Length: 363
Image (cartoon, rainbow, N blue to C red; front, top):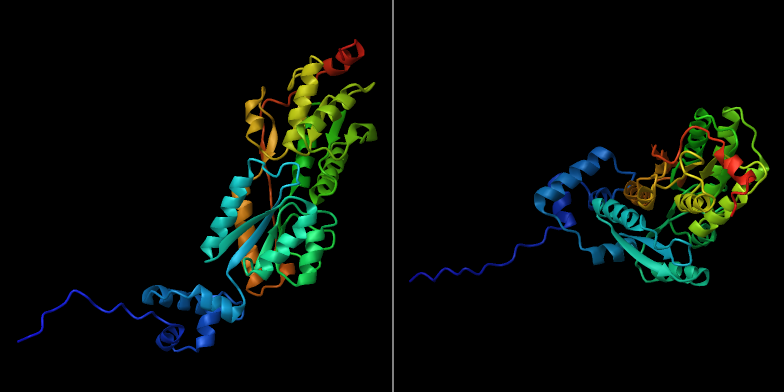
């Protein structure tokens, strides 16, 4: 009598690195390094190994990999809640890009927060100590960046969203904000403006110095002199933009156009202009930078330079993974352009701004 067949069967044996190596005729070490993207393995061999892994349905044990390599295949990102716009609306797009870029390479993203500068360092140390991040993406590079100093000291890989004056050992992705501000000046000069003011962003950040350089170079190319009285630094919020614009518009010879390093400051300029009976786009031209959604809801909509934050996040994730795989950090530096969005907040020069102020338009 034949035994009854059973529907129960033994689970398929898990495919191992040894199985892969035998099938490919390679050493286990070569297969392992190819799977982890090490640069000493040729791209052709890496592709061959990864195709075989798909054919054999090879699934690495993440815990075993972490023990063997000391890596958890996780990227770290620490949100600084003390920043003036830590909950900025474009953060969601940036994090989505980071997560997608990590996932494409088989990594995960660990997000933590620090509620003060004092706790920031402890957060980095704890994520590294607890094996929750192999390296870090650092948003908004600073001129003297204490995060860079700490991670250099800890010998932990990192990439910056922004550039550094001391570039040794630094990788980064950045948007060329200086080019955008330069273009904004030329745009206004072509419209006939010659008294062009500049309200810069936070001077502790690297972007502010670069955007200031862009303003100066744009004025030089347009054949215009920079009036120091029309340049205001270190303004990042709507209220600060409003106050800075009030100072500019109450000058004896006010500007007819204002270039702003960040959109929120530009929206503050709208308020200051409204208080003085000035119409944006006709009496006073304004440009911003960031491309935040709020700029589409004012009237007229803000002329600005938009940044693809999702793409920035994805590119930073991939740069950090390449650094983790052993590439020279100083070869991992990329930049991109912001997109000019020409809306209604700029127009031909009109002298109502000056006339209105001189006739008592400050009430």
